[in-house]
Length: 357
Ligand SMILES: [Mn+2]
Image 1 (cartoon, protein in one colour):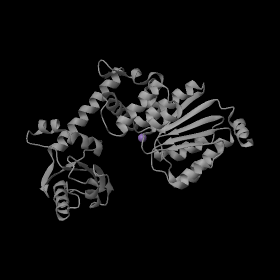
Image 2 (cartoon, helix red, strand yellow):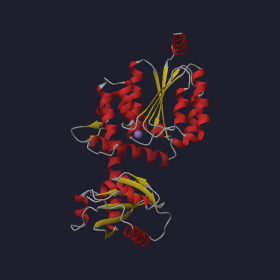
Image 3 (cartoon, helix red, strand yellow):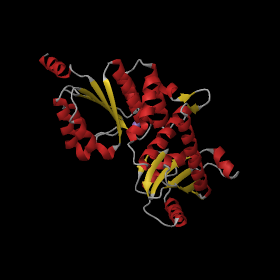
Image 4 (cartoon, protein in one colour):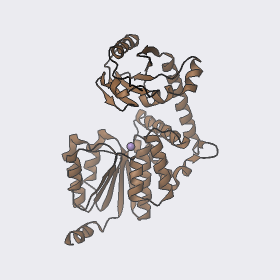
């Protein structure tokens, strides 16, 4: 087929690989490490950029300067607001002998999918919501590599919030502490994460994590993670101690305020641990419905028993989600107690969030 010959000619000079991945979490980092291992097996020079959604303009105009490069984008969806700009950058790169591989698990619009697939040099686009991005990178690029298998497993544990693997939870905290530290000091996040990325790409978790001592091999990093966790725990304990409880339609409903620097996932996981609760107050049991209110007025919903529908509760606050976890909005507030009374009243007036079983 003439088509294939042409594309082979256009891409046969590929000498380097540019990885662009999400800087926010372990999934983005491990996906980049898997791509790095792929580059090594193909003998391609490797460069990585870890980034976030606000920086697409800068990234994709830089992509337009690439030549003879395989560009692999992972754990990032399309920013539909600047799709023309993204397209222009990609088209320029392709006209200079580049090829595009885009592997992701976020929500994509048809228009964005069509745009990527219409590019030259046989673009590869895999979007699958059932896996995290590292798992997709593993399957597509390095299915038989054991280190990549492990990197994908670690990413899955944190991206799906399973928290079954100690090293995965530790790596999640390490990424947060390095990332927040770089942002605070106005340093480049990719530079700050590069050492960790390089070790993960070289030898997987073995490169960074000591299985026997359950600690990071880098003692400074280990200390930073330790401190970060202690701070986090202190803040969460304090927040949990200030909880407001009420029994509504036979269910224990609890509202807590999320301290700054923490996510509703942090808070939800912490507040559903019965051991932690009884250490604060022996009488404190896991709530059937937990609402966490952020400083900005956003509400996170988590359930502690099956008889509650978080999505239905969130719907009463302009939100939605799953029966087991959902999100909504209260709005800006000053008096936490007044907010609690108001929320309790709304949940009392409506029982759609209580399921039959
Ligand atoms: Mn992800």
